[in-house]
Structures are given as structure tokens and as C-alpha cells.
Length: 143
Ligand code: HEM
Image (cartoon, rainbow, N blue to C red; front, side, top):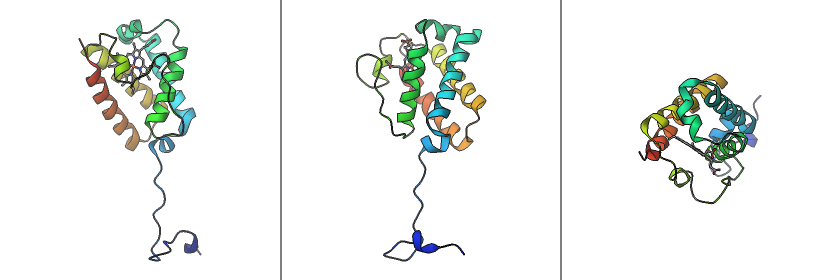
């Protein structure tokens, strides 16, 4: 028989709510996030439709693979903190030095959506992620 003694609220005797998993836990943690980020940069590096976005990035994408993985872990409620590669500021202000237009933003959203879908993320998380990221991308447009 199910033992309620470990999960009941001691004051009311009602079953205690289980702690809600963070998006970080629901998605599958650090390794899964790294796989999504690797897929994202592989797509940007190889698929011609992302050429304009690729050309804004440094030749060596390894530092970005590390920084974006770390940022997304932090953003999704994981235990790690995020430190930008150089300088400080929030992720939005770090994009202010780039001339980002609607097409760049759309390429970013398309590549990230494909990476998320290719890695098979729970739709309850993936849809919320895509919507929040699209809002961030819209806020980064400066040209
Ligand atoms: C509007 C679409 C976006 C464009 C065109 C864009 C472009 C860029 C570029 C060119 C860099 C620097 C790359 C390099 O130095 O090689 C960068 C860095 C970065 N981007 Fe974006 N980005 C976009 C959206 C986003 C979004 C939505 C996020 C977060 C969800 C994000 C997270 C980051 C992070 C974490 C870095 C590294 C910053 C650092 O560590 O200094 N970007 N981005």
C-alpha cells in the first residue's frame, strides 16, 4: 500500500504537493541542453539558409557552444551560473554591438527551433522556450 506518511502535510494531514520540476530538469539537464546547442551551431555552420547568421559569428564556434549552453542552463533554472565570455551585462545588452535585422533574428529562431525539434524536447517545454526566445530575438533587432 502507498505510504502517505512521507508526503502528507504535517499541519493539515493533506497530501503535500510534490516539488515542481524546473524546465532544466524537465528538458533533461546539462547534457541535453548541450546537445541542442551543438545541433544549433552545427546547423548554422552547415546549412546555407543560415549563412547570414553564421557570418556574424567568429570562425571558431567552440566558445559560443560553451557560453550558450551555460546560459540556457541558467535560463531554464539549472544550478549553474552563467558568465559571459568577455565583459559583463545581460544577454540582451551583449547583443547591442551587433547590427541585427529581422532576417538575422528569423534565422536564429528557425535554427534553434530545428535544433530543439531534432533533439526531441517535451512540447510543454519546447513551445514555451520557442515563444520566449522569439520575444528575446525581437528585442535584439537593431537594424
Ligand atoms: C536576434 C537573434 C540573435 C542573433 C543575430 C545573435 C547573434 C549573436 C552573435 C553574433 C554573438 C557573438 C558570436 C561570437 O562572438 O562568435 C552572440 C553571442 C551570444 N548570444 Fe546571441 N544572437 C541572437 C539571439 C540570441 C538569443 C535569443 C539568446 C539567448 C536565448 C542568445 C544568446 C547568446 C549568448 C549566451 C552569447 C554569448 C555571449 C558571451 O558569452 O559573450 N542569442 N549572439
